[in-house]
Amino acid sequence: MNRTEIYLDHAATTPVDPRVLEAMLPYFTEQFGNPSSIYAAGRQARAAIDQARARIARILHCQPREIVFTSGGTESDNLAIKGVAWWHRLNGRGNHIITTAFEHHAVLHSVQYLEKFGFEATYVRPGPDGIVRVEDIEAAIRPDTILISVMYANNEIGTIQPIAEIGKLAHRYGILFHTDAVQAAGTLPLDVERLHVDLLSLSAHKFYAPKGVGLLYVRQGTKLLWQQNGGSQESNRRAGTENVPGIVGMATALELAYAEREERNAHLLALRDRLIDGILQRIPDARLNGDREQRLPNNVNVSFEGVDGETILLNLDMHGIAASSGSACTTGSTEPSHVLLAIGLTPEQARSSIRLTLGKDNTEQEIDRTLNVLEETVTRLRRLTSAQARAR
Image (cartoon, rainbow, N blue to C red; front, top):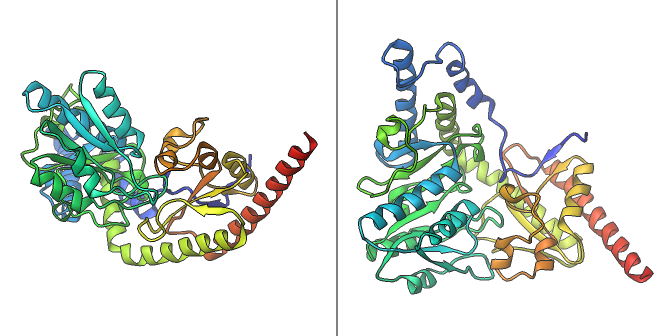
């Protein structure tokens, strides 16, 4: 098996920061109690959750009680969208949802699921730059619109959406607003008041915390039907024994990310621009997908004309470089990326694309090596394709 030497898929998942692991370890061993138990060990676990909730609330600028811990971003998205939709259906308050055509599948599939039950949806397309226009969201609003859901930053092309402006628009019309902020956490501000959001989803493993834990911010007074039953945890909002070590780890990782955000972002931006400039200067017929400036500091999504993206990834892997072709949740799919199709790429262009997402521990030397391998790989594959075409 090849050993990964250069990891460039941080949008898929991140390694657990050693400081995060250290904070978690006691809750696997001597402080292992069930937080619902009334004896001392249970009270210790409950105190750890309460402290983590308060620590996270300070970063989100919300009340601790507005945070609901979940198993991750997918559950949080499902809970937000289905919960709002079903509450409104049961109370006769509306039937229409607005989202975008390039959301994560946790959002798209939730909305499509609801359509099977008679809900109606409008999927607003982003521009060719990968950014949704506020006026297009407003044009989709109907008298029966109950929810708008727009991701904060796209998980494949990294483009940052005008969330605060959309939130203001939604509230002007009296509509609830949800954002999937999974990719934004750690690099972009998460002040829910300034973002004007009613619901916000996060997943811990995107910012150097463990997999299997996330949260949904729910503004006080927001009406939704809770989806998971079987216990009174999370103030009767999300049944199931809480993942104490995971929650502690998520709080620690989020604090570290925002304490170090300025330094991390500067490092990531320098590496990102070094990688983008190197690709566009050294490899002919390469194109950057999504706006150059209005994008996450760690995201590079590029297409290489005439070369299959999956083949490039396999060649990178043989050199110990890990990257992806898009969302980790759709890896293995033969279908072209719905995100790239939504911004106007052809299926062939979409299939020729790869995503390289950087992390806080990547180095300039790793970027330079990646550029060398990428240039050699694309050149060789194009020659091979050309030779095969002539042989026919």
